[in-house]
Length: 347
Image 1 (cartoon, rainbow, N blue to C red):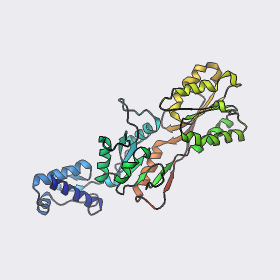
Image 2: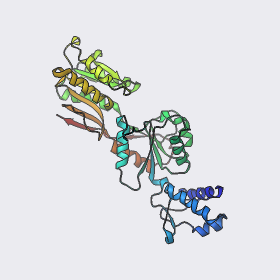
Image 3: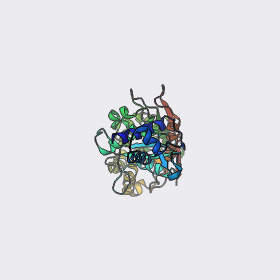
Image 4: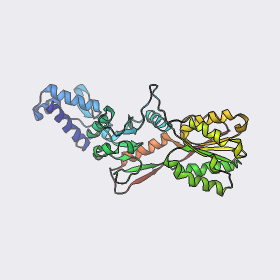
């Protein structure tokens, strides 16, 4: 077993270091047995491991060659904090959109391995699989959606693999995707103004990120002469999105004056519940303009008029992969990777 592991490790290292380029022919089985002192079955088992890992292909009499698209160049990890349910779908919009984008990539040099449901417990099978793939050089780079959940054990295991994640002090990451919600808030206010709406309500996710954008929201509304009293600024947890319906009910409380004519939602996981709340209000909210952050290509909510502002996660993933494919790990300066904002107006 030790000889099998050594043979596989030495060949894998030679491929990763470029001594055997894609398509190059490897030494014959008999040559490997002579150079390593191992028996034929041991050499065959070692080669089978490399075939399963994607490093080599066997061609019978034509010999064994390095794969045209070996994993250390063409296989990328997408690390999601959430695991899909029994139906194969994720509960939240971002992991679902990214997983669908990964499945839709048809390029042989851009294979995506999804590692989902990871947290700070490296003893779990899914965590060990990612650590083993990193140790074996099977990944050309990582896109990590929530580094906070796994950084204590993942960062030491990277072994020079480039990584995109949220910027963290002291974390040697290479790039971060700037999905700037500040732009979403500003454009949402502009869209409401352009549509002739003057009375806003707002619902965001109950976290520090939403609090960070409240000053932008208030300042933008005041600058354009839009009404946004504190009683119409609410937050709900995506762990229980049904609270968004209660936030809608509170914003349309008849004791607070004339009802809102536009509702801005800064998390699309809350939209369906908010729409249910709007429908429950009946004629009082029938003409409300709904504006929300979106993760395309998710289908739009069943509400009109509707404006969605956000990012196409297929484009986000493609941008991240191009960066990882051409980036040397851990540059001296952290690189910001921007993604274009997409807008959809439905009446």
